[in-house]
Image 1 (tube, rainbow, N blue to C red):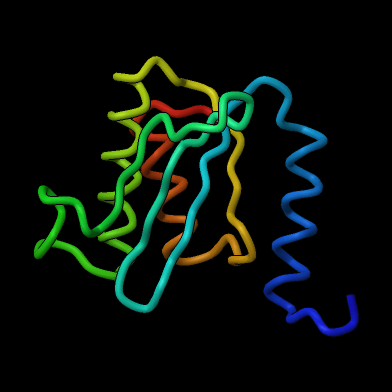
Image 2 (tube, rainbow, N blue to C red; image 1 turned 90 degrees about the vertical axis):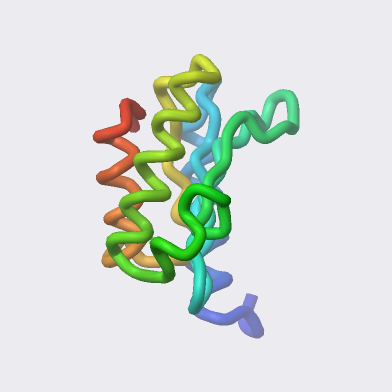
Length: 117
């Protein structure tokens, strides 16, 4: 573990705590890059993605980017798609990212979109 980056250590710590709390709920996984933000709801029991959204989607492309506003749009879109797929309760997996800025904006917008976590 000594050779792992701070990001990777944080990611492992978050995943370990998620496994303890997850149970039967799907996982809302977030990834952000310098240009885009991606989110997906994953059913780990079946190993499939239930719903996903990103700033690369057709309806969001060009209007948003790697900004707090773009993350909010992605969160709202993901919340709507999850409700359409029948998912209302999820576990939030922020990966190794801090719960601040774009990640927090996505989470708040997903809650507004109807997800509970």
